[in-house]
Length: 476
Ligand code: AMP
Image (tube, rainbow, N blue to C red):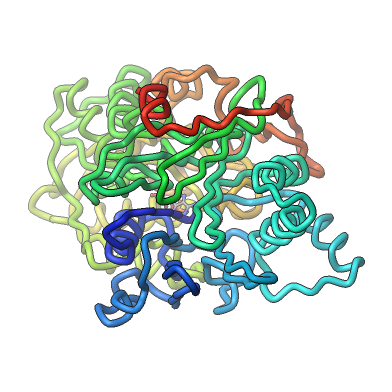
């Protein structure tokens, strides 16, 4: 749960990085950072808080250069410490290195142990520093970034979309299963890689394609070159990106997220029809689903919960008590739309159950007679180890409860979760190409104590496409 971006642009990059991070703000609200290379040195700035709070015009002015990377963070591993804010910056021999990562490694402890036994020290508690160490060691050894990335991919188990800048050259690579999203775009005078296509859109750029699972992309003043480093038999795109995490206007791996959610809304009605006076969403995460539900059921869509848009995501509050209070500040029911009404309330997911319970209470207090809850994901039964903050089974309301017990606990009149089959059909990939760990408890790579259906990964010798034109024609 982070957003990353890398840009090369002859016209300068700091403002563009800023707006790209702005577009990715939903992926992490705890901290933000930018590093640029001015031709001689690394220019860097990072801090805790939202993008708009961290950066000011004078700060952006000092981030000089035609290449740079940026990061917004929501921590899955590594505590909320200033030293964990990314990009992480290093100087090694004469080289200036900056790295940003979205994802989560599951073999961090083994790798860290190994380095510590060899006498290395770590400054942060993030897995990103381990990626940097493996890469830098190998670049030192072989002098070849492509080989270093190949070596890195062999050693790292988990999800990772990574952008690393070495002396002003940007290297972007994505794990062989393509767990986290990553795309490539063209700007007026340069190129961009970013977690989601919305960052490219925000800069008026053109999305070329997704970074392929197992691919390395190099961007510098000469253009873009790509190498396929590893190929897996199957992919494992994170299903939760489609359900909740990505912006609805993002196109990920060729699929428009909004359409997935709207289709699920339709399927929710088909699977468990109910008659009601209105359909209402939990804004904004439930809106596309609710629109689909209203379309198919012909029940009018009526906004009955108004969102205060100046507040962050409530899930991101660290304590349960804060999260509960935050729901009330964030969402305000409209009694005139709810009094004596039977309402279908649509949201993307139930994780801990805090949000749904509070919202249903608020709607009943505002006069709603019946609240039929419809959820765009199947029940979340298991934790995520690959980059989404879904911590322990104990905290997940559905991990040990059947649907009716969850319904009772959130006080809904009725409750229906979309089936996994319908969800997969709405996304359009084969089920084998999706990571459904949080829904099924079965993961696409081995995780201690968990069931797995690991994908086979082969490492290959790729060929650089040295010409931009040939690259672009391949892309289209
Ligand atoms: P709750 O059931 O109270 O834990 O809250 C669930 C709501 O929080 C969902 O409807 C989503 O909108 C949002 N949500 C789900 N998963 C996450 C997550 N991993 N991080 C942040 N927000 C989330």
